[in-house]
Image (cartoon, rainbow, N blue to C red; front, side, top):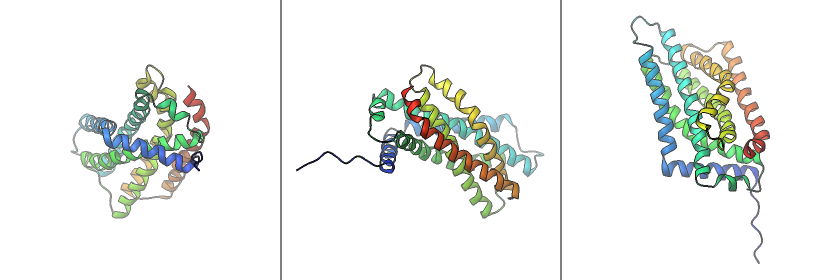
Length: 237
């Protein structure tokens, strides 16, 4: 005797959506390549615009590198989130996804994980490339580990916000322009915190850095919780 399939739990549903998005990303690679190209282009333009390294102190080089890196990652997050939803809309699967008998927050979490993983790969290229481009470096292995943790925390915050606004703008005609316009004002605190924490990882950790880390973690958690609660309204839009 066969019965109806058992509904997926929230965690299983989120992982299933994330796995689906990652399979599509791995199969087509257009989102990953577009995100990586965009991040690299922004980083290169800033490196050329801000000039050479002559007469630049290590602190100034670190500050320029951190600002350029997080600007590139913020813009790349917007591109990745927009493509994640646009692909499903173009394939006619977005409406079917919203009909899954699971909590909308689980769908949001799955989409977030699907955007986060490729952006972390892009960050793994962008962060060292930015440091090399501006002549900055971590003073110790501990600083490098702090920088990796900051990259994970900051990237999570960027993806949390841009994924939510990607759901809002996917059905709009000017979604490519509207997503950054809506998301970037929200991302400013996270970008500032990530830049300050990255500087602390490169130049030396201070008690002030701990406060910034708590702030960034609170931003990430608050954004994820609020976006999960509001995701049903965003998806309907």
